[in-house]
Length: 90
Image 1 (cartoon, one colour):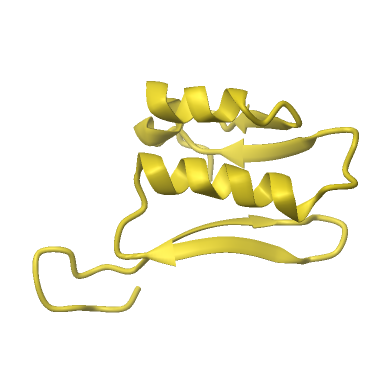
Image 2 (cartoon, rainbow, N blue to C red; image 1 turned 60 degrees about the horizontal axis):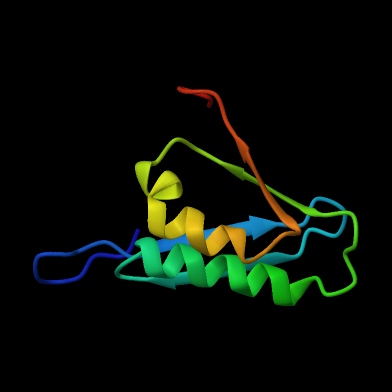
């Protein structure tokens, strides 16, 4: 994690690894919140236009993933299905 002066010294990254190819899609910045998570879903949807069977996204229990704004955005991407990891999953 890169350090930066000020109140928010950490660089954050949200990403997805394609299991079959090893390709990584990501979004990085000093802030990863509701808007960025929703934007990332949009990126994933555009990144796999030929994926007909669905896109499964493993997610931890960070409360932002279940925020009403994020869940509303997720409804716009019918091919994306969240897979919730168990609490305390390594």
